[in-house]
Image (tube, rainbow, N blue to C red):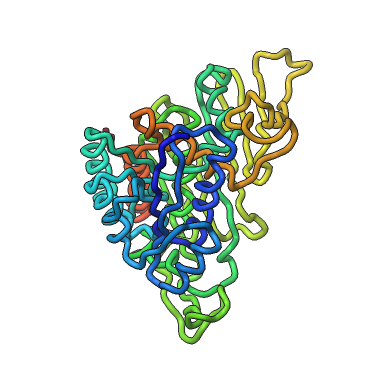
Length: 391
């Protein structure tokens, strides 16, 4: 039997549940070099965290994240809390010699992200590993897209188009949440979902954004306060709160290879629930992806004769496609949760091999630099804003 990896998860809501499912599932479908153990789940509300631990399969609970880091039976700390707490928790865990998985975006500010990347670099020198959770990288169709670009099938990249469209707060009567408060979330649609398409496009192309011109907008500036604890989720209470983040972000950009990029992130696209749309055009071909049809990649081979050329619909469920061989027979699609499982597989494998996993905290910092440049550009009436290099 492989030796164990004790996991302490901090946070038990949406992301906590997704991460819990991944830690439970990964060793049952993949031959992992370390066996994850769901050691402890942490949250501030004792009754709620106890109920979550029983439901999600955790052996014990804590109400103070510091106690998780102090425990000898915890080897890895998984951070699924709001962004304002990421830096404090992750840095403390790294300094205590714990491996760290931290949800995206890495932090709320460049300063916090840089401090986290510095702590990760110091910890790596002592064999302590860290990863930021951009899980959409682990969708098999995205893995195939990256492979096609790396093989030169698209030639020189010329255009990158990326959208992340949701509609969950389009209703102006939807109550306030921490995701609408800048001091907790850092930004709105920009950091919550825009960070994903920044990372994905850079991951697929192998290039980085060098500058942006941006606009941000908050469509609903006041929202009802949520109901008191114990009421139904999503139910409004009395009074209103001020929304201090963006509802939508649009920006253009340029990549290191010269390609032009167009980005849009919004939580006000009525009818779109989780539409991540990416199209990349090169000198030899193009590809297109939409997460709402996540098992499919569209590929255009510009080397084919015009009489038969056209976008090819590739169902990415063959055993030779990234990650797929460990799951179901061809044609039996995967879902949202599988990306989190693949993330666990890659992280555990890297830890066992003594390798630095990707995306690293340095990668998370680079995305944070892009988000910061977008905010600065929007504040300066869409002025072209360079993105500093930070290696």
